[in-house]
Length: 360
Image (cartoon, rainbow, N blue to C red):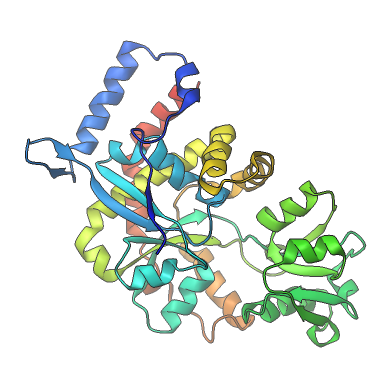
C-alpha cells in the first residue's frame, strides 16, 4: 500500500522563502488576523485547547506531475493550515487507484480524469465532481513531424494503449478531417508512447500534450499535435476533484477549506513556476528541466482555479456520448456539485492578494 505523504511547512524546508523580503508589520498584522479567523473555524481542539487542523486526505490519479502542483504547494506552503485543515497527499501505487480509494472511503478527495468520473457515474457510483484542477482538455494525437493533418495517418501505424477509450478518441479526430478509423493500423504499445515515438515505429499516439508532447520535444523530436478541443471537443476540464456523497455529508466544511487551500496553490503555481517546478521535481524525483517545461506549458490550464461551468460540462457529456466514451449524456447536476468550489473561492479571496504580495 502506498504511503500517505503529508506535506507541511514544518516538514518541508523552503530555501526561497528566506530570500524574500520581509513584508511590513501592517501587512503581516492583516494576514495574521485573517489566518486566525479562518483557522479558528472548522479545526478540532486538542487536549490543551489549541486548534489542531483537521486532516483531509487526497489521492492522486498518477505519479506527481505539474497538474498536481496546486495541491503540493497548498500543503508545502501551509495554505491548508491557514484554513484549519491538513492536506495529506496519497500517491498512487503501481497504477491509478484514486477512484477505488475514494469509493472505499479510504480518502476524502480523489483526483480524477473527468472521463473516469463520467464512467463511474454511469456504473452507478455515487461520486460527485466538486472542482476543476485542470481547466482544459489535455488529450491530443501526438504525431511525427511528417504528419501534417489527421488524414495523413491513413495507412500508417498509430500506437494505442489498449484502453477502450483510445479508438473512440482516434475516431473523433480522424472523422473531423474526413479520415476513417478502419484505414489506420492500430498497434497496441501499452504506455510506452515516448519510447515508440522516439524509435519511429509509430506515426502517432493518443497522449497528453502537456506530458508526452512536451517530453518528446525536450528529447529532440519536433512532434506535432492535434488537440481534441481543436477537433470538436468543448473546452472541458480534463482533471477534476471528486468526493463521494457520503463524505460530502460528513465533511463538507473541511472539504471546502481544502479546496480553498488548493485555490491558493493554483495561484502560486501560475505566478511562481520555479516553485511549482521545485515541489513537483522533489515529489516525483524527476528531471527539473523537463518538469519546468511541462509546468510552463500547463500553467494557462490551471486558471481560473476550481471553477466548474455547467454549460461546458453539458457540452462535454454530449461530446463523450457522440464519440462513444459514454453510452448516454450524463445529467450535469447530480454529477457535479457547483456550490463547494464557489464557497472555497469566496473563502480564499482575501488571501490571494497576500500570497501575491509575499512573492514580490
